[in-house]
Length: 194
Ligand code: ITT
Image (cartoon, rainbow, N blue to C red; front, side):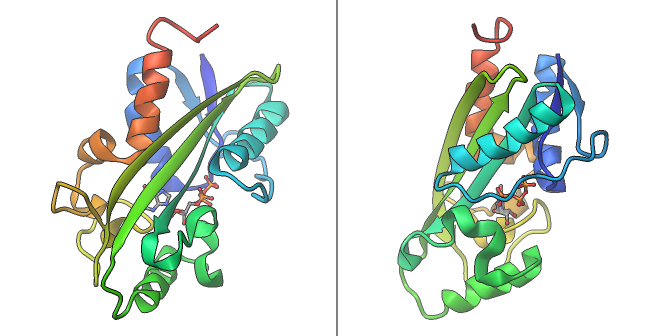
């Protein structure tokens, strides 16, 4: 099956390519099909992922896989959540991380969770929806050089390590996106679900 990865985030592309390899799909990207992703103005991760996947499926005539994700910080009442890409109106991962650290200065409850929704949209309108979550805590400073986004600030529960200190495979085994991908892989074990 030919599938377009409906994301402009290079970190997500790497993780999706690595995890989906066992399915043997031909994975295309927005570099192959320059589609402008729609504004993510829905109220849930799933609906935002569906907006992106459907736009790309309609434009390309191919199944499209989108990911909408975010980090929810307990002490910030779940912020930034679905607004993680625009947190503090900052335009880069580095600026958002600095902003998150500022918002968390002096805060003792550092607990947080990452959430990912994956939507695989087919041109005929059929949708597959998967979700994954993982708990952890926001550190007081960055650790690790891998990953993307908030990875250096998020220490994964029961591991003592941040996502940025993990290889792609290690992150997949425990992450929100890895868990959603695992559900997708299981659903496709015997070909596309009916
Ligand atoms: P696309 O919409 O093009 O897929 P995006 O980066 O805008 O890319 P989202 O709207 O889903 O993606 O925003 C998610 C935000 O949360 C964004 O700032 C990411 O860097 C961050 N994020 C998502 N997954 C992450 C992960 O696994 N590790 C660290 N940060 C992550």
